[in-house]
Amino acid sequence: MSHISTVLAAFAVLTLSPTLAQAHFQEIIPNADIVAEDGDHSVSLDLTFTHPMEGGPVMEMGKPVRMGVVSPAGRQDLTKALVATKKGDGKTAYTLSHKLSEPADYVFYVEPAPYWEPGEGKNIIHYSKVVVDLGSGEGWDKLVGLPVEIEPLVRPYGLWTGNVFRGIVRKDGKPVPFAEIEVEWKNDGSVKAPSDPFVTQVIKADAQGQFAYAMPRAGWWGFAALVDGNKSKNPDGKLVPTELGGLIWVKAVDMK
Image (cartoon, rainbow, N blue to C red; front, side):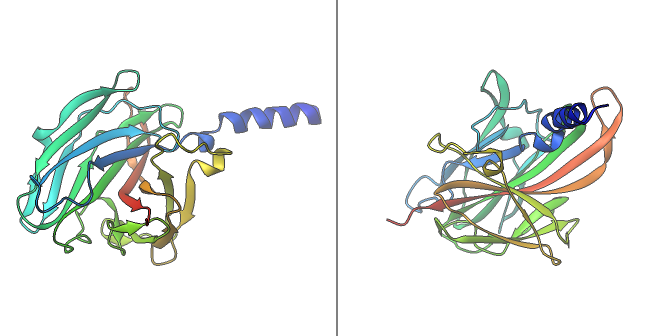
């Protein structure tokens, strides 16, 4: 093979490489991360599997394995309260409405059904969570106990744009040294990334599994810690690699 042919072949491989594929994020976005004490104390959540910075496309979600909330009152299963909806070009997503019972911090979480990504040859399971406060300020750092989870070291609400969010990546409760974390902003359509590296920010944890990131724009930010899981079966029954993600969603607000 000539040198030119070799270069062209390598370029073709790179353009088709899974490493250049869009990052997948399991969104779990509440209508408010801080609920007013003088309101009806209701919160609605939107669960969509998508590419937030690029505004899509939306991927089909199977019925989540479990959906719940952790508060000082304990753990409550909300799986039966999920309502299927359609987004994008008819892809399934889910919504949930829940009334907060007392002043507390509520950690909502979801374990989605495995998503088979043929372009990357793997199943994807992203355990996602978000914290909603109702006049408490306590309990925001409580762990759900997910197989992969980010423990916040900064209160994940009441954050100004430019604040640094810090966390610890945990797998089976233990810190993950040098874990990789993908970060994306939920684009409202006002920003166009100048090139692909700006779409998904990539950072690494230190030897203790800790990481930090300064959020440069107001809105929702998703932090996805990615680790390898045990092999699982794809729709054809073949054992394939499994990507496990531990996600947390954090909102930044402009100081005015």
